[in-house]
Amino acid sequence: MSKMALSCLASNHLGYIVPRKQKHNGSLPLSSPLLHAKISLLYLVSRCHPRKQGPGSLTRALDIKVADSPMVENGQFQGTVEIPVNCYQILGVPIGCSKDQVVKAAMQLRATEIEEGYSPSVLPSRQELLIDIRDKLLFEPEFSGDVKEHVPPKSSLILPWQWLPAAMSLLQEVGEEKIVMDIGRAVRQQPNAKPYIHDILLSMALTECSIARRGFERGTVSVGFEALARAQLLLRSKRSLAKLTLLTEIEASLEELAPVCLLENLSKPRTPGNAERREGALAALRELLRQGLEGEASCAVRDWSDFLSQAMKKLLAIEIVGLLPWDTIALIRKNNNSSEAQQQRFVIDCNCFYIALLAHIALGFSSKRLELIEKAKKITESLEKTEAVDLGFERIICKTLLGDGKLALSEDLQKLGLNGNSLNRQFGQDVSRQANKGNADFYSSLTC
Picture 1 (cartoon, helix red, strand yellow):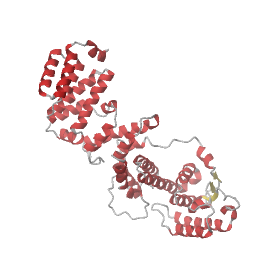
Picture 2: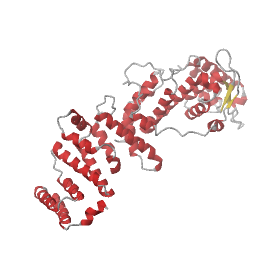
Picture 3: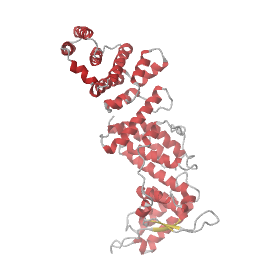
Picture 4: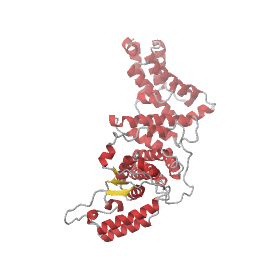
């Protein structure tokens, strides 16, 4: 699948992660919450968690300062928190911009409808914070700085705790994604943040959605997928957030995007840095195959022939062999009339089954494992019976590697040579000469 195709597929899901200001009209393919353990998405998500920081490392890096104070009667803290953000960043305007630009930006943000899901207290806090930021830039040189005199603006703001969710929501809207995530990670474990943790986590989740959207627009589906997966984890971590429509839409998007993300991760270079992603993609592929073979309606794959063919072309022989119990699949496939066999052929077409056959032969020969050649023989027999194909070469290769009798091999080779085309006859003659020489080393190399 081309990058353009990936971009087009991803663009169909951008509606799932747009700001929640728009009313949900029920047109999105919603799915029930994915709470069961055996789900392909969780395998992928498990490979994309950000690395944990050491104790206090984020707080020190961001220079977050918290002033402790007792809780007041209304459940809010009177304490303050200092965050490493200047006033211009809150408004999303360049440093040193004109006063008219400052006033215009503040007015636009005040008129902007807040995202769905925030606590009722966040909106009035935003209004108060925007007025405060506007006034600081208009009347307090310490906060506005002076570009001509090379005086930078004050690089931090001291806010009351009840204004922190408002600040994070504004920073998220103006695109300060890294700052939102860093502040959120630094303060979410602070005791003073407890009354505001719902809104803090929501700002972080919406930021991850913005990161996902940008990833999809650039055609990097795996980047967008992983960002949505992190947003899912944030929303699930708080019971009040788990009720939001946003989480349902994210999970629906993750289900739809899982196959595309899987193929993209399998396409990445086989380097140590990509090892975990590849392992997660393989586990997800096994889970999707399980869902498909068991006929689960929730399975996100719609065109199995195209999807599995693409996936298997990106796998090593050892990965293909470990994907499914192929010998069991071969036995089931022989029973053409069973519903299980019919579902199997819908998921695994003859071309993919043949690739599995070649993988067993290649890995069995290279690793000297005769049990894999036995499985390859069973797959060959199953394909010949159910697909009405002549796999004479493959059958002979299996017999040769298993050390079957020379006479039977010679007869098979002669039949193959008589019935096949010129290329097949030449191939048969070459193998026949090897068998008639009694080359014991050829067989013993697999067993020693």
